[in-house]
Amino acid sequence: MPNYLDFEEPIRELEEQLQKQREIAQASDLDMSKPEKDLLQKLSDTRKRIYKKLTPWQKVQVSRHPDRPYTLSYIEAVTEGRFVELHGDRTVKDDKAMVGGFGMLGDQSVCFIGQQKGLNTKLRQYRNFGMANPEGYRKALRLNETS
Image (cartoon, rainbow, N blue to C red; front, side, top):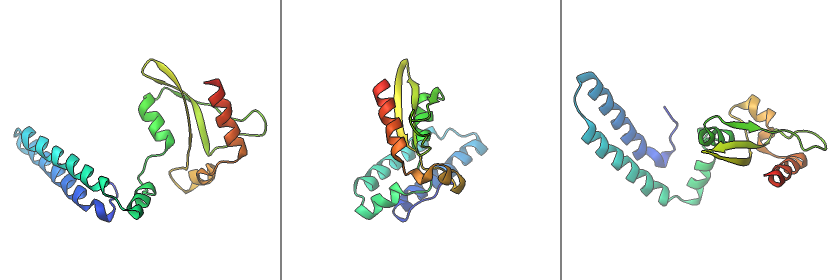
């Protein structure tokens, strides 16, 4: 179950309702497609309404959310696993906080560059908590020039 922020309480409630409805439909073999579609629409509308009116502090909370995906998560999702990460700046060393490489978006080859923080404490230390060093910026420049 994902973590919810205090202002996301209506979303949590609707997702729980949806989960219960799916369990009931599965257990009883009833056609619940219409109520499920209505609930999904209500969930979508609620998300739009909540996120449209976020305060500055709520935006900070969303940006620091522990379940928020990071760069490599987005890259893996859009390239469907067809991504090759490149390392090093050809001068000093590889900066683990800056990730970059080439992947396929459909039939098009694309260069991806971003910062990676890490999912747990060990990976955050490995990735220097997402804080790039000069060699990371040189790596990004090198990848940008080759794309």
